[in-house]
Each structure stands twice: as structure tokens, then as C-alpha cells.
Image (cartoon, rainbow, N blue to C red; front, side):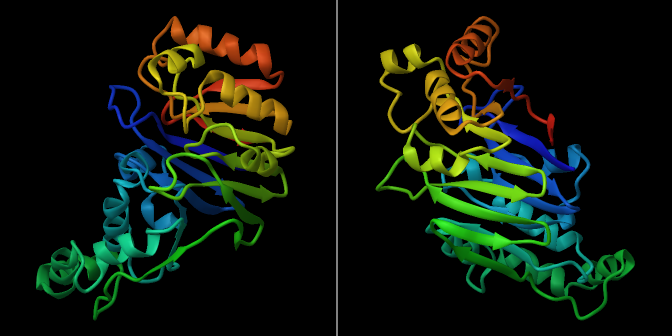
Amino acid sequence: MAQVYVLGAGTPTPTATRWGSAFALDVGGEYLMFDCGPAATHKLVKVGIVPTRVDYLFFTHHHFDHDVDYPCFLLCRWDQSVGKENQLRVYGPTLTETITDRLLGENGAFVHDWKARVNHPVSQRVHVNRGGTLPRQPPSVLAKDVGPGLVHEGREWRVMATPAEHVQPFLDSLAYRVDGAEGGIVFTGDTQPCSSVVELARGAEIMFCMCWDDEAHMRAMGENIGQCGTEGAARMAQAAGVKRLVLVHVGPHLATHGPMEQGIGDVRKIYDGEVIFADELMSVRLP
């Protein structure tokens, strides 16, 4: 049974109940993450998954609300390891390799941290007490810039990507689909309604789709370009024939009672499948 944990269901605007985007997926005992927004590492532990269990991380794009916790996740996963874990594989659009090197490379922003932990006697002792052996190895991450098509195949799953329409040409954006024995799971990332994401999601069991705000409110505020709101998310889900639509990347206005209930009603006028309004730390099972 596959299970998705919603670690981040919000936007760049921090609120008491949601902030940024991040998801963890347990499929066949393998753990994948999609995006790594604010406090994602802490939220991962809150749902019962330690960072060393996660072997794959996929970025939709490199806005900070989707990747700002990346250095924390990288360093925590490495620091807590005993050297027997699988090498972390990180995939994402352009800049994924560059950002990883800028964080952990020999001239990276956190080289001072990992070199101190590799070489200081107390840090070495903590590592040995945890079950590691000396000499302690530096962080080693396989990061790869990817585009549309097959991204990776695991034991019981595969990940496909397609372009998403968000803030081009400033950043590249991808949507992902994970297919396993129980069906397909789609993470749209940030996107406006577009045919590429609809085709990726065709017949999927679940689609986690950004839903920034009420569509009429977005149009009135000039915020309806490069983003999905209530109507856009509903139209894509209906066109793709997905069975369940999970609304994520929800803005502060739509997350308040009143607009929330109206927004769910507006979605249901267009989309005839099951609608889930995501809260952080909730989980969604497949099937």
C-alpha cells in the first residue's frame, strides 16, 4: 500500500498551520520526497519518517518555498547516517546539480560544517557511538538535472516528468507522476492549467494539485497567471479523469473558513471525483 504524507500544504506566506510545499511517499517500503520546503525535515520526523530512510528527492522547481529546507535535509540525513545507508539521489530541473554543489561541495556554503564533523574527535566519537566506523566519510549525493520523460525506476515504481507552466523563462518547472502496482500519483508542483500536466495525470488515482486561491479572487488580483486556483485545479483533474484531487499549495485566504468551503464547492461544480482539502501532516493512502 502506497501512502503520501503532506509535509507542506502552503505557500511562501507562513501561517500557523501551513507553509511551503513538501511531500513524502512510502511506496513498497521505499521512501521518496517531492520538494523540500520550509521545515520539511522537521515535519518529516513528525510523521514518523527519519531522514535516513529517504533515498530519493525530486524537485518540481527552485522557488524557496519548495527547496529552502534542502540544506537542512542534506546535512541532517548525512549527520545521522552510519555510512550504511543508500546514497541519496536527487532529481530536479535545471539548477539542481548547481545548488547541491553550492551547498556541499569543497567550496560549498556548508563545507565548514561537514569538515568539522568529519575531523573533530567528539564528532567522530558520536558517529562511532551511533554505529558508524572511522574514517568518517564526507557527504556524497547523486544530484541530477532532469527534464521530461522517465526520471527513475525503483523496485516497484517509476517516476515520469513533464513540463509545468509556472514562471518560465526564469525557472524551469516539472510535474511528476509515480506509477506503481496500485496506480498513479501525480504531483503538479506549481503550474497553471496546461495540457502537458493533464496528459501526465491521465487516469491517475490521485493528483496533488496546487490551488492558490478562489479563481475569481485570483483574477481580480491579477494572480491567475502561472498558477492554478479552484477552477484550474478542478478543470485539470476532470480533464485527466483522476479519481481523487488533493488541493495543496493553498494560500492564506483560501485556507480560512468561508473561502475554504466556497472553494471546495466551486471545485465540485467542475470535478466529479473525490476532493480532499489538504492539511499539513495528514496522509493519503493508495488505493
